[in-house]
Length: 423
Image 1 (cartoon, rainbow, N blue to C red):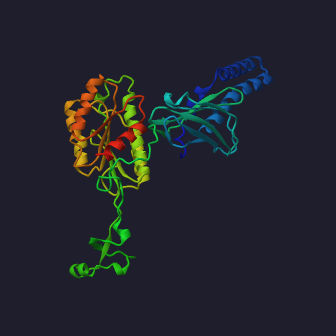
Image 2 (image 1 turned 45 degrees about the vertical axis):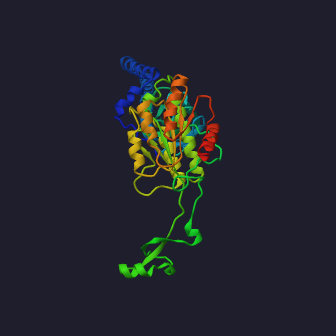
Image 3 (image 1 turned 90 degrees about the vertical axis):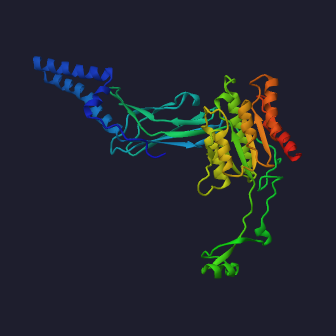
């Protein structure tokens, strides 16, 4: 993290508000001694009064200067963690004042309550140009994006006469990813065209060329020049090698609030988010081109421009799932429009309860003979009612599995694999 915030550089007179009871008592005693010295004509008493009054004033000036010369930085390791894992936070303080050490420092870093109590530290004086580091750990079982900071600093002098506060402005964000359940290495179908076991074909390896030529680029092998197209276009054209086709998968996440409204503590929605994250992580590891679509039509990692590599896709989708929230939508119209813009390939849906009309919309999302599997967050309604709603999806060619609170996603994955490969 870069240097934290801008220091508080208020006028010097504002620093006098930091005088403690002891400091104010010293001022009052000094003033009283000075008055008595004047009335009694005692020079020694005047010197004592001056010392009592000047000591807190000197502490105010020194601390005010030191406060604006203390910088802070924060480092998270790592900044992205899975739910239930810890992240280590390191705070580094530096005294940039020349020739002036700090007094006693008391630190407090602001953290959300879900990450634990606010960490507090006491740091001894820091010499001019010196540094000090303190560390603490944060942990959350709930996914989300949590701000850490800003840091609050309190400085005191060795005599306890002055206390000055300093609040930095910079903060960092800790991303807690959804829980991921390891899935078995079984196929759910979905080759490069969206069907089958997932075998990749690469005509380039066997020497076959794409029939569509492209413009010559510096460094291209001249043996690949396509002379017929070159003569037709008047510029060098080369035969383009066909790239290996990549298996595709679309993970659909139902975020409709009404799909989980019967679930008071909301574990069903978190179960669906965790299931989607597990599927994305598993498929990215197996080399699939994965994208996440929600019922509103939101798409991750996006559809514009050049697509990132699989590792970046997984990171982008996970970051999106870390902060995904409920939508107020009624159906899956937004998802339908997003799926129409690109062949979804293998379609995996993690949904809540689905009424008649949304079930019809969801069933229509399956295109052609592509495998489609729906993991329904069951246990929110009467068992017979849930069964009837799941049957509506099955009539549309979906493989439908009940994702109960105590069910294992790995076992459901194996069941889905047997069902899709047996179709």
